[in-house]
Amino acid sequence: MNDLDALRARATALHLHGLTAHWPEIAGAEWVPPFLAWEEQERARRSLERRMKAAHVVMPTSWLRAPSNARARWESNDLTCTGRYHPVRMICASPSASF
Image (tube, rainbow, N blue to C red; front, side, top):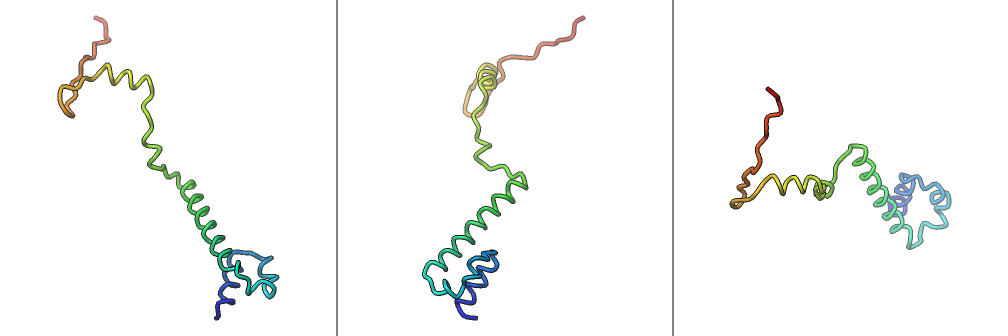
């Protein structure tokens, strides 16, 4: 199998029917090999995106979200830092049951 046959097989695998129908006219063109490579790369990229979306994969950048304003206020009021990595709780829970 020579290079032209390999290129035609790649075009057929990509379902580029117009290209394969006119293969004798375009077989020797310089743009055919890069065109097939671009098409294969783009299809592989889109396929990966589609599979990741279907698998519900969470991208790491979404884990780095900023805290909400309410949570930021709560965290700043509730804890104080007395040393490196040693926060101390400043408020205590009060019982809510009545006697």
